[in-house]
Image 1: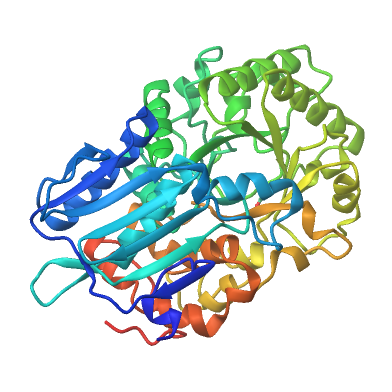
Image 2: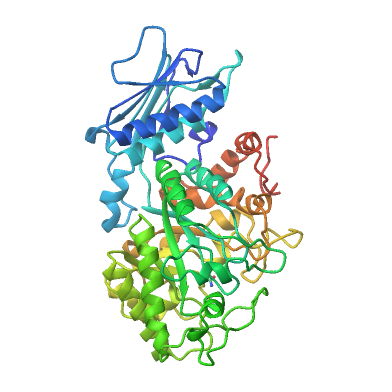
Length: 505
Ligand code: ACM
């Protein structure tokens, strides 16, 4: 049997169908897990997800708690389970990807996932979940199989624009679940822009009081409270997803300029912006209010978020000379570093000296990328988000109802068929920290519109980020993705019926 016939996305490192009976999720299904709090949390999540699929409560017990005749799913954290990083994984990330590895074995009466960490355990459980199919007796089953798996890249992300149009927490949770299903592990939230400010920021309350209602014309206003952010952080964490907050500076700041007029040279608040133009708004280094504002908001965001990264934007500042831009980005980066976080910025920040380990997010491959090459020479890592491949708000083709077209049309194969380490000439493969899709909300004002742009392309990007090059092929992906609507339809997700796939439904 071809491994493709098992239809996992992303395709694992090694998968071996076994000549044995399947693991059947019968009425006596239990989950066995170790007793550390992190393991219990994976066990509870696994039992909850399986309970939803089987319409029965699934019990979680400690190892050794099984009874004869039960169908047992064992979840085990053990250093022995580590799968060594693949040679295509950048050298600086091999320990991190090994930590996310897992082994899975399923057969009659028993399935086991083992991993060196709970992150790997969760990834392995999610693979197990993808194996489930209804059997002739009505019970779900996983075919007998052995899997050994490790991601290629440590950073497998999605950037979600909350600023042009807001997605409330319940919808962000749907996106997080979808990410987890495809083993994406970094959710970048674009929280601020010209149209609105979307995060309660305690030191600067007028940001949400004045600027959370804004949106593009037809879009939704709203913001995340601190309680919302905490809740999303733990929801995401339980699913192996880390939040990366973005405060976009020193451009894309019209909402902030409205809330705090002293950030404007005129001292007057600009009008609300509900259009699609970019690049016109900016902070001003020479104003006395600017430094305090940057310190306050970045310190708040660093304090309010649990993950190790803060994204400070830096893109598309079209009305500023290089020296002032450098001064503002360097000042912002210093605040982020002093708060103990690692700086992430869009590729425009590459010309500014940053601490080694800073992450530069490449989005536009059209301009000269010499500054990006130089940033890498100075120790920056590159996060690959090429607009023409992974900006999932681009239309699929000319007939796509919603979406933009400035980076071209992106059909499924365009999102799949590219190699992250070959994107920037003259940059070593070891510089690439990972791959991140992005979806901007200028035209996407509800969850269905968002999901229809994400699916099926998010599955393609997830495989680019996870699967090692020798196991990646468009024909293989095309065959496997054809069955994914089983999952999307069950979950009620809108999706695009790409003509490049022979959908089996
Ligand atoms: C961007 O698309 N301006 C990062």
